[in-house]
Image 1 (cartoon, helix red, strand yellow):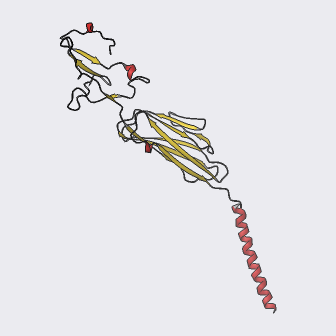
Image 2 (tube, one colour; image 1 turned 135 degrees about the vertical axis):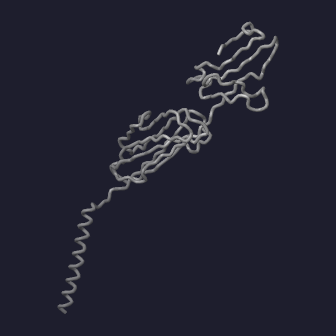
Image 3 (cartoon, helix red, strand yellow; image 1 turned 180 degrees about the vertical axis):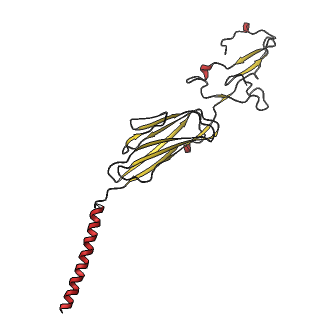
Length: 238
């Protein structure tokens, strides 16, 4: 897009094309980052609709015809919007795990529409009691106890699953409370489904060893039988 156009640059009677074609405007940090052209010619008022026809993706353009000195054309304009994308996340994990057992979390990111997502970020502060957390998913990393994942485009209806593994505490009782959050590049019309939590219980270790308990039950049974025998013998002596 040419800037600082002077009146001498525009000759009456000629046709000119004005383009919004500066790539830096749409890049990260640009004034139009995350914005897309609106559909041209919408509505009945040419003074407030967008006249920018697509001229290559994603640049719009408008044709003007200067007719004479003092002419104003307020209908030659551009409209941009930020598309909305409803991203959601569901965190799935075990309700109960034995001490030192494996804990597996699945984080499911879904694009519910109405537009395609250009990218997203998941943040998950992992439970302090979870040992050796790790993931092999591309775009994910764990630092200072927090899982961070960045993902690429998701079309409407598509999902992406992230898997995290670790170990439960070696002793219980304990509880692992965990919440994950997703944030998209586009504005989200429904923030109620951008957070998901799961709780995993770690039971305590029994105070009595199962093998000892079984042996105690056998001895108790023998003692009861012996007691009954003594009573029977004593009765016979009378």
